[in-house]
Length: 91
Image 1 (spheres, rainbow, N blue to C red):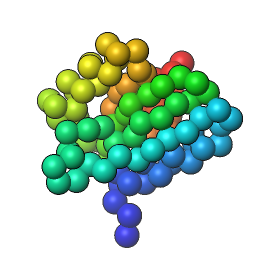
Image 2: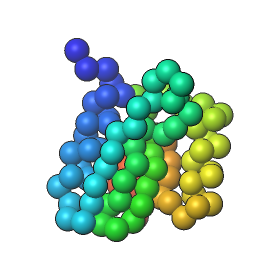
Image 3: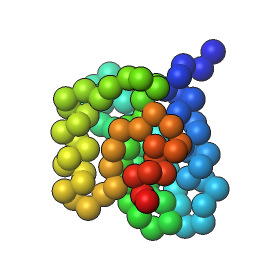
Image 4: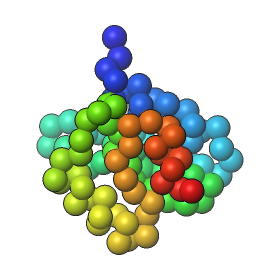
Protein backbone atom coordinates (compact mmCIF):
# COMPACT_ATOMS: atom_id res chain seq x y z
CA UNK A 1 0.00 0.00 0.00
CA UNK A 2 1.33 3.43 -0.96
CA UNK A 3 1.49 6.01 1.80
CA UNK A 4 -0.31 9.37 1.38
CA UNK A 5 2.93 11.33 0.88
CA UNK A 6 4.07 8.98 -1.87
CA UNK A 7 0.74 9.47 -3.64
CA UNK A 8 1.41 13.24 -3.67
CA UNK A 9 4.99 12.71 -4.90
CA UNK A 10 3.83 10.39 -7.70
CA UNK A 11 1.12 12.84 -8.78
CA UNK A 12 3.60 15.73 -8.96
CA UNK A 13 6.08 13.62 -10.94
CA UNK A 14 3.33 12.66 -13.40
CA UNK A 15 2.27 16.32 -13.72
CA UNK A 16 5.81 17.55 -14.44
CA UNK A 17 6.56 14.75 -16.88
CA UNK A 18 3.63 15.65 -19.12
CA UNK A 19 5.07 19.12 -19.83
CA UNK A 20 7.66 19.84 -22.52
CA UNK A 21 11.06 21.11 -21.44
CA UNK A 22 10.48 19.76 -17.94
CA UNK A 23 12.02 17.15 -15.68
CA UNK A 24 11.82 16.04 -12.06
CA UNK A 25 14.02 13.90 -9.82
CA UNK A 26 12.92 12.27 -6.58
CA UNK A 27 15.72 12.71 -4.06
CA UNK A 28 16.68 10.09 -1.52
CA UNK A 29 15.29 11.47 1.74
CA UNK A 30 16.02 8.56 4.04
CA UNK A 31 18.81 8.01 6.53
CA UNK A 32 21.61 10.56 6.40
CA UNK A 33 20.09 12.42 3.44
CA UNK A 34 16.95 13.57 5.28
CA UNK A 35 18.32 17.10 5.07
CA UNK A 36 16.89 17.62 1.60
CA UNK A 37 13.53 18.33 0.01
CA UNK A 38 11.73 15.56 -1.91
CA UNK A 39 11.74 16.78 -5.51
CA UNK A 40 14.07 18.85 -7.66
CA UNK A 41 13.52 19.75 -11.28
CA UNK A 42 12.43 22.27 -13.83
CA UNK A 43 8.92 23.00 -15.04
CA UNK A 44 9.04 24.60 -18.49
CA UNK A 45 12.48 25.98 -17.71
CA UNK A 46 11.69 27.24 -14.21
CA UNK A 47 13.82 25.44 -11.60
CA UNK A 48 12.19 24.15 -8.43
CA UNK A 49 12.80 22.34 -5.14
CA UNK A 50 9.69 21.13 -3.33
CA UNK A 51 8.82 18.98 -0.37
CA UNK A 52 5.70 16.85 -0.65
CA UNK A 53 3.59 16.15 2.42
CA UNK A 54 0.58 14.02 3.10
CA UNK A 55 -2.50 16.24 3.35
CA UNK A 56 -2.61 17.90 6.75
CA UNK A 57 1.07 17.31 7.59
CA UNK A 58 3.39 20.23 8.35
CA UNK A 59 6.97 20.93 7.30
CA UNK A 60 9.77 20.66 9.84
CA UNK A 61 11.85 23.67 10.84
CA UNK A 62 14.70 22.30 8.70
CA UNK A 63 12.43 21.93 5.68
CA UNK A 64 11.09 25.48 6.08
CA UNK A 65 14.68 26.72 6.24
CA UNK A 66 15.60 24.84 3.05
CA UNK A 67 12.60 26.35 1.27
CA UNK A 68 13.81 29.85 2.24
CA UNK A 69 17.35 29.03 1.13
CA UNK A 70 16.27 27.75 -2.28
CA UNK A 71 14.01 30.75 -2.83
CA UNK A 72 16.97 33.03 -2.12
CA UNK A 73 18.86 31.07 -4.77
CA UNK A 74 16.17 31.78 -7.36
CA UNK A 75 14.27 28.51 -7.25
CA UNK A 76 10.53 28.12 -6.97
CA UNK A 77 10.29 26.30 -3.66
CA UNK A 78 7.65 25.29 -1.15
CA UNK A 79 5.96 22.54 0.80
CA UNK A 80 2.90 21.12 -0.93
CA UNK A 81 0.29 18.45 -0.30
CA UNK A 82 -1.23 18.22 -3.79
CA UNK A 83 -0.62 18.86 -7.46
CA UNK A 84 -2.80 21.96 -7.13
CA UNK A 85 -0.51 23.23 -4.38
CA UNK A 86 2.50 22.53 -6.57
CA UNK A 87 0.95 24.38 -9.51
CA UNK A 88 0.15 27.29 -7.20
CA UNK A 89 3.85 27.83 -6.55
CA UNK A 90 4.28 28.81 -10.21
CA UNK A 91 1.20 30.96 -10.79
